[in-house]
Amino acid sequence: PTWESRKGSEVGGKEEVTAESKIMCQWRKEEGGFTRFCF
Image (cartoon, rainbow, N blue to C red; front, side):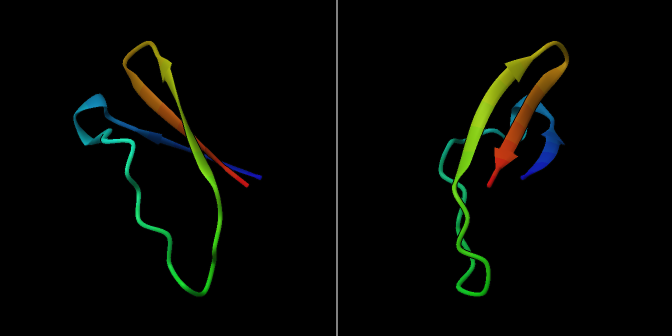
């Protein structure tokens, strides 16, 4: 699993999944933005 931090302005909840790495991502709201958890 990997963690990826993004600004809240970039959070859309509809991240595209590349064909080479089909991963599932969840958004978690945190102070100062959001964190995307991918696995």
